[in-house]
Amino acid sequence: MAETHYKQELYPLSVVIATLGGETLADTISYLNSGEKIPAEILVCIPEEDSSCAENLSMKNVKIIKTPCRGQVAQRAYGLQRACQPLMLQLDDDIVLRPGDLRLLVQKLGQLGHGHAMAPLFRLLSTGQYVTEYHAGVSGWLHSLYASLICGAPWGIKRMGVISPAGIAFAVDPRYCEPGLFETQWLPGGCVICHREDLVTEDYYPFAGKAFCEDLAHSVLWKKQGTRLWMHLDASGRISSDPMPFNWKTKKAIFRAHEYIVKLIGGNYWQLRLWHVVHIFKEIILIGLRRIMR
Image (cartoon, rainbow, N blue to C red):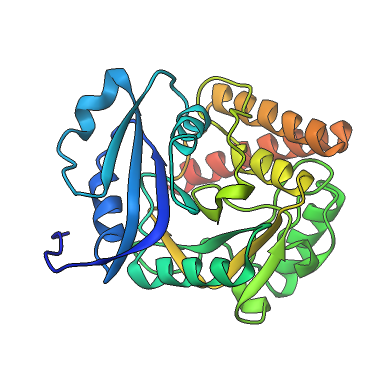
C-alpha cells in the first residue's frame, strides 16, 4: 500500500505493536498511516536479535523499540511503558485497521473518557465476513447445549461477551445486537484502545511461547481495576484466516492457558477439564472426517 504524501493531522494516540518482524507488519502500518489523521506515534516493539526485520520502516511517526525481552505480552508491556500519548492502541502486526475504523474507535473512546477500553469486531480480510457467527435453528440449539453443559456459559445469545466458569470466552455476533457499543467481559487482544490512565503495563502472562488466552487475562485484570470493556460494533479490524494445525504440544499450551484464566476468575477446574476432553475428541473426529472426504 502506497504511503500518502499530503500533510496529515495527528491523533493523540500511541500505537504499540509487538512483533517478530512478520511480512504483514509493513501493510499494517501503511493502513494506519493512510488516512487524513494518523497516530502521533507507532511503536514497533521487536526483540533486539530480530530488529533488522524492521529497518525498512522509515515513516516519520514510526519508532523502532528494541526490546530486551521476547514474547508478545512482555514486548508490548515494554513498549507501553515508553509510549507518551494520552490514548493507547495495542495492535497485532497482522491486523488491518482502516482509517474510518480507527476514527470510530478514537472518537468513541474520547467521548466515554477514562475507565473504558474498546475493541472492534473482526472480519476476514478476504471476504469481509464476521469471524464470529451464532447459529440458528437446530445447529444453534446444539451449540448452546454444548456451551452451557460443557463450558458453563449462559444459553443462546446471552453468552455473547462472556467468560464462562471453565475459562472459555464467547465472542459477539453483531447480527443480534443494536448498533454502537456492546459491553462485554473480555476484549480480543489483537486490537484494543484505552486511555493512558487505564493501562495494564506489567508482563502479566506467566508462560513462554505463544501467548494463548493473553487477551482474557488482560481483560480480567482490566475488570478488576474497574475498567469497563466495550465492543464497537460499527468498527472492524480485518484479519486473515489461518487455521491452527492440530498438535498435542499446542493443545497442552492452550489448556495450561485456560487453567490460568480459571485461576484468575475463580472458575471451575473440573468444568475446564470436561471442556478440554470434549474439545480434543471433537478435533480428532473432524480430522478423521476431513481425511475420509479427501
